[in-house]
Length: 322
Image (tube, rainbow, N blue to C red; front, top):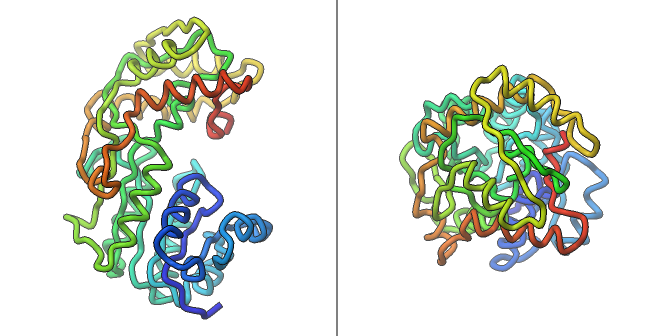
């Protein structure tokens, strides 16, 4: 386990981690990259997908296993935990930071979210654990960069609570623009940032990656309707109570996610934050790292809808069924 490696990518079985590794392997030997997962069974899958790379087991709940996994690592990509439990996520992230420090990791890159742009005063619920983690990183005295990854255009079904069979969706009256980006391109840009021989210095150690243009949630809903063969009615809901009640009932439908009142209550804070401009920032760094203009979020959403209809299954997003 003590073999020195240049890059260790956590969450390697996920879309973002996979995109990062794919880009890294275009520039460095496979043996210098370690793909990691919390699931031991993923080792064979990752070895097949990324031949020649190393595998390290990473369990965010087990700090001793983290220290062992991080031994000899020059650059660590620390993907945020996928739990919606903020307290649990904070504990897991604290373990990763402590382990990275004890193991002597050269530079840690953390996958934060872009809500609030370069500011750190977002009130959106899903951003709070990221702000806590960024504060913990700052207090740790390790070398780090918090990469505020732009909102995935790929995840539009979750943002809209839309399913391939949907003919009606409910949206909160509060609305605001979001600089949606492609998850694959975010991974590519992140890898290119990690590949820089000398880590770039950013104000407050925050790197912001966004799409090239910002669209409101309503505009994305219109794009889905335009690309789909189904008519899509959009009903605006004025209050949090009405929204939560309508969404819980709607999401009980066959083939839908059945998400809870608590989930939609937190989701309302997302839309309130967006209405205040917390997703509106368009930053040039992603284009600089890609060496080209990033994909337009609205156009990408329309492409996903059309491709989904073409394959006969419809486009879905896993977290919509959480």
